[in-house]
Amino acid sequence: MLDELALAGQVVSASVESTLMYSRIQFALNISFHILFPTITIALGWFLFYFKLRYQISHAPVWMRAYRFWVKIFALTFALGVVSGITMSFQFGTNWPGFMARVGNIAGPLLGYEVLTAFFLEATFLGIMLFGIKRVPPWLHTTATLVVAVGTTLSAFWIIALNSWMHTPVGFELRDGVAFPTDWWQIIFNPSMPYRLTHVLLSSGLTAAFLVAGISAYRILKGDTKHGPSKALKTAVVAAAVMIPLQVLVGDMHGLNSLEHQPQKIAAIEGVWHTEKSAPLLLFAWPNEEEKTNDFAVGVPGLASLILTHDFNGEIKGLNEFEGEHPPVKPLFFGFRLMVAVGMLMWAVAWLSTYFILRKKSQPGWLMKALVWMTFSGWLATLAGWYVTEIGRQPYLVQGVLTTQEAVTSLPPGNVLFSLIVYAVIYAGLLTAYVHTLFGMAKKAINVEEYESADVEAPVVPELVTQEVNR
Image 1 (cartoon, rainbow, N blue to C red):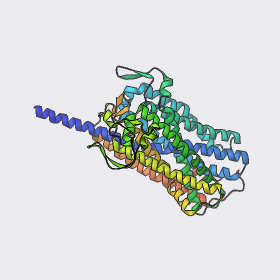
Image 2: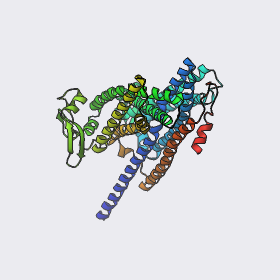
Image 3: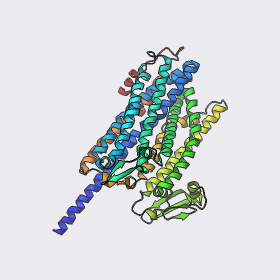
């Protein structure tokens, strides 16, 4: 009888573990798909405002043509971002009921503020952007473009406020295990929020910049001799060249903040198994979690301590001080290095391209091809960084308050696995269609006549977007 009970207990435990694993994979899949689109629209909205403002000031048709092309891509990307965001909210109820039960008093209002102040703002004025270009005064259309850009940024503000609070929770008290807010100012502007928000906004800027540069380079390489792609490419690479050093500076500040509030995450990123001073920066290693050491390690002595503490002899806490409460090492170790490697490549390409612009020289063919290949490099860096951030909070969903295991659903693993497969198939199809549509729109734009006047309209959204999606 005891053996049977023990066996039954093992089966139940295995079932819970499977449900947890499938739920985590499903959430990672959903958020990975969703984040691709807001990462573009947050900054692309500001690029559109810049194009429209340049046209408003100079009345040069080329800026309006750039606006007309990119506003269609903005609309398509915005639509996919909204749809994928809705499925995200479903998962709080289906896969993570413990999350809302424990911290819903804080998460609910923050998500509600995002919908009320940002989403409605974007949705309302996006209509003027798309349909009002010849129906409202130019100043009102430009203002609508600005409001949409502000709305997308405001949306990021509320989401990052909640996400940062999950990493550095303050301004609340627990009553019978449930979190109640005591200070909304502390909750919103929690210790990691300013660094995380700035880091995310700059990531969005770089993602949109390389998207604009890549698609523009593609059009030029395909024989588009109009001024619009050239102007858009120059704007994008110069913007990227300015933003990348800022991102490095903000990343350094974000690292210092994480070292203070989440030292276990930093220890995993750096592969520091035991607390040490003058820790090396590991350029490559294979973290060995069983032996708690790094195999094949190649590092620069003292550099990790210098970067993280600004002192060669600075001390970094090791994973040994967080036994049972630190994240898995390999995903953070390799994810962080992938993010940095892609960022360094973006830096090199953006500065090199800007060099040719400043010297008033043509971009070499190989550099144009590099820009095309790096059209979605921002996605790669963003996803790598996002995994480092989110996996780095494990085993907690809300740091020190709620573990992932406490929040997961009690549904049978088969149910979660089925929905996971459905999501994966749908997302793969949508992502393929999105990328295909973007390059299809670029090809179609090559054959569009260059208008003598900006007031002469090409087919604008939504007709053209609908046609492209349906192809």
